[in-house]
Length: 171
Image (cartoon, helix red, strand yellow):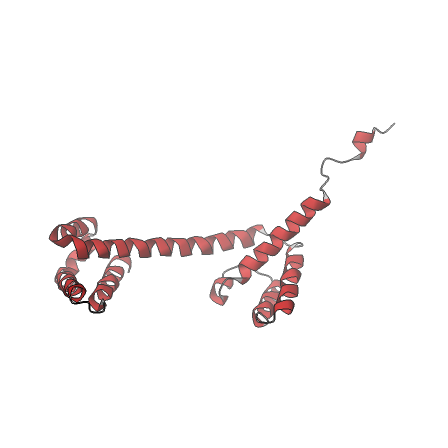
């Protein structure tokens, strides 16, 4: 005789769980749609999904059509493995976060150079020996930036200093 409890299998998935999974896949599709075309090209999409994304980008201004297209993309994603797509999305976002962090580090270094004088310059040279090649230009830009700040002029030299730091330290 079959027990009542044995009748239900262990891999039973509730309707609510199925809805949550479908919504998660649709959200992944929306996140992928927020990428630029160049970033989206790095995501491993099959031809059908690629065409669906291209159409969604084309009709983005038409609210209701775009909403239906996003739902369709979510439906298409249910029959595909979402892990490679999620990994590619995470990789792209992480690169963006790393670029932002590098940008902020360069800004902090520039601000330290502008406010710290020779001690800050020496500390920067100890941290980043590559800057020694640009020592004369660094000193010149720091002096010009201080002068511009004192005279309430646009921070042209400060921007040039940032560009110099970026090109010297990250190329």
